[in-house]
Image (cartoon, rainbow, N blue to C red; front, side):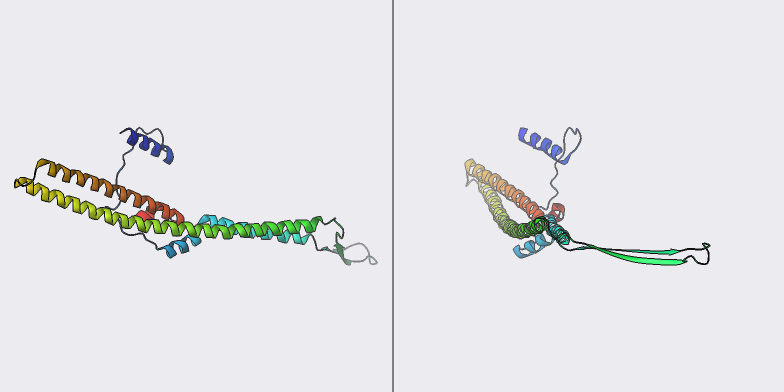
Amino acid sequence: EAVARTAARALILVIGLDDTPDVAVVDQLPAEPGPPPWSEDQAVELALKRRPELRSATARIDQAEGATDVAKASLYPGVMAIGNYTHNEGNGAFSEKDSAYVALTVSWDLWDWGIHRAEVAERRAARKQAAIAHDALIDLVSFEARRLALSASTAHQTLAVARTGLTAAEEAYRIESILFDEGTAVTTDVLNAEAEVSRARSSYTLARYRYFVTLVALARAVGELPAETLR
């Protein structure tokens, strides 16, 4: 009871509720859950499309490329064009009414002690590092999605085994109860069969719980809300 109350308070803390005295936990999940919604390959494909970490890594590569282009611009000359047009009225017959000129200036820093080239090299190295981190993240995300998809499949198979054991234990208890009513079984036989049912039911409950926990982890790995996956 103490463990249950502590877990409820931890849940209140995690989801950010106000000073709530207690929460009611209701099992609304399927009693007989189906298999995982994705295979290993499907999980990897979805993870590579949906995981926000990969989008951030791609954005960092684009940012590094933009910084490299900016650094390269300092290696080239700067060109500036200036144009002016003037129109005068009422200044006499000999005044120039229309005048215009265009000027072009070019500036080029030919000697900067290699500062600009070093900046370009630094930006290129940063872009290379971003690409390496992106590729490493792809491998990590793919591995995680494949691992959790396999774990979910294994957990579902374990659930089926636990369900079979529970059915067998319940049937054995039913038979022992009949034998006891007919006088061919003793009380300890019925109690042992009942204890086996309790153990089998506990094993099935734990297997079901672990399967749902694995599904939640798999949903996160592929970038989907857990509620959608559990539904």
